[in-house]
Amino acid sequence: MSTASIIINSKSSRSPVLAEELLYVSKRHSDIRPYVLEQIEDLDPALDDIEKGDSNTLILAGGDGTMQATITSAINRRRFDNQPNYVALPCGMTNVIANDCGLQGPPATSLDNFLWRRGRGEINRVERPLIGMQLSERQEAIYGFFLGAGLFHTAVQFSRENIQRIGARRSLAVALSTVGFILKTAFDSKNEPTPLPVQIRDANGELHDRDLSMILLTTLNSLSAGIFPFWGDGPSPMNIMAIDHPRKHLLWAALNVLSGNHPDWLPKAGYHSWKSNEMRLRFDGPVVFDGEIFHSNPEEDLILKVSEKAAFLV
Image (tube, rainbow, N blue to C red):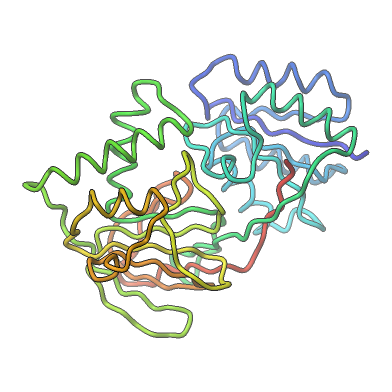
């Protein structure tokens, strides 16, 4: 069996002992090479060393941002002759990727169980398409799975300031953030957020100008806490949901969508969902991509394209 490598981002979790627990588990298995990141700048040197060896399994112990940075570096720098199989170990403050295609349960315990199962050949492999995001035509793509803008950025800020600050994390943080923000927004009629004017060009080249409250995109099959606010049909891998501005019947719409119901009145009220392989957006505002915040340039297209896949072992 080839050696597996584990990258442990010690700054991803608020638990100071988690990295030690994961190192202890890795030492119990002779075919594991651990790398501990004290800062995200340590990632590329770790990957430089890993690509020199024979690892075809790369265990990522961190949050969504750690996984995004690792997969992006592997693809853009063509580090491996064949892309490795990843293992998503949920060790960050947001773990949407691991919730869909990663190991479940306490990280150290789930890692130990996985390594024993790997030794017996009792593992499964799943693939997920990647969203390649380019902030301009000249920039290399950043690869990830879940993107949002508009009110979603406000919701992320709300989560960091009000939910994660009090110690909630992982799926609980997402659930509390979603419910809390919906309630806050739905009943706060005096502070209607400003619209996000967006030019949307779809894969067919059709251009749509819209004032949005929020837009979300993902190639995952599920999100944290059972939330999956997408209902578009078709074979394309990128799920998209957009809410027009001004938002209408937000609480009633949220109760329906979050419970898996998609009544016919949703599009008329400004709630839309569809699938695509590629989109180009043009707007001025922050973008949250796998928990990392970027800023779009209103003078250039934000390009979102599905062209790569990542494989995960579970």
